[in-house]
Amino acid sequence: MIFSGTPSMPPRGGPGKKRQRMGDGSVDTRKLVTRLLVVVVAMFVFGFALVPIYNVMCKTLGINGKTSGSAYQGSAQVVDESRQVKIDFVANNNIDMVWEFHPKAELLTVHPGAVNEMLFVAQNPSDHVMTAQAIPSIAPSEAAKYFHKTECFCFTQQVLKPGERIEMPVRFIVDRDLPKDIHRVTLAYTLFDITARKPPVASSGQ
Image 1 (cartoon, rainbow, N blue to C red):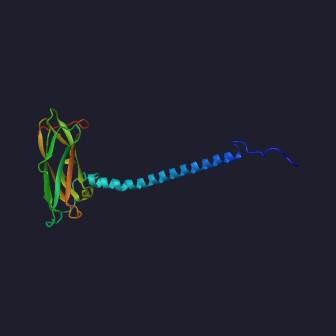
Image 2 (image 1 turned 120 degrees about the vertical axis):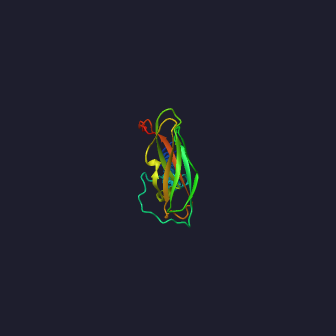
């Protein structure tokens, strides 16, 4: 049988076109999946990277270098006179704290194992009784467990009447086991006004 006329062509937008569009969609989907996988892997790697970054920040800024909140009860140590460690003393006021607050000296050179003392001065310039609490920290942070306070004004709250001035001692021992690569330690105190939380009661003898 013979047919005349031109051969039939697939209509526009027919199966061939649909297959092309489906193929393009598959390529786009694969690209999207690939990009999402890259993002997930990057986030995973960055999560692990945060740990050393955080450790470096702690080491640099002395974050988490908190000392014990009670007096050291360990046995006496033999003084290592062959080694010296420099101790820097820093006094800071928290926001809204109006007291004058400073160490009597900013630097002390000590021998590990020896008992040492530094005095901090505080004065209340306000016209009312105030209560304060000092919070200590140590830098570098890894030195905190080797810094032993045998007596500290930070163990108790300080109550001062208007204009009153006091000298507050901190006695401490730098442990003989302090890592050899640490030659300088900073002891910093931040003074907080806690009058609103704990109404002050100044003794009659003050």
